[in-house]
View 1 (cartoon, rainbow, N blue to C red):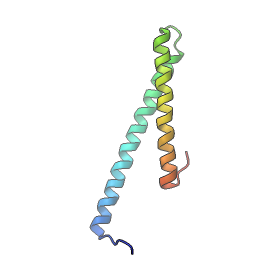
View 2 (spheres, helix red, strand yellow):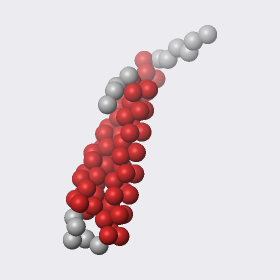
View 3 (spheres, rainbow, N blue to C red):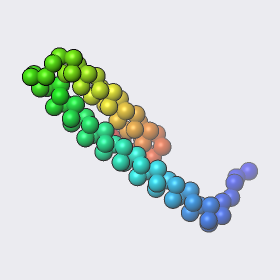
Length: 81
């Protein structure tokens, strides 16, 4: 037995899907920008090693988050990254 949605319910779900997609896109952009900053940090040999180590650690965390977003897009939408 399937559930039938009204046109209004379908429109609401579509709007929510678009809003979620925009939020994810904004977050991915933030992560990419932060990753770039981290890369500059861990490659800068003039910085103390503790700061460089933390920048590398954060960069790896960002990479894991981006990989998770890619996996979710692949599972939910068939989009391979």
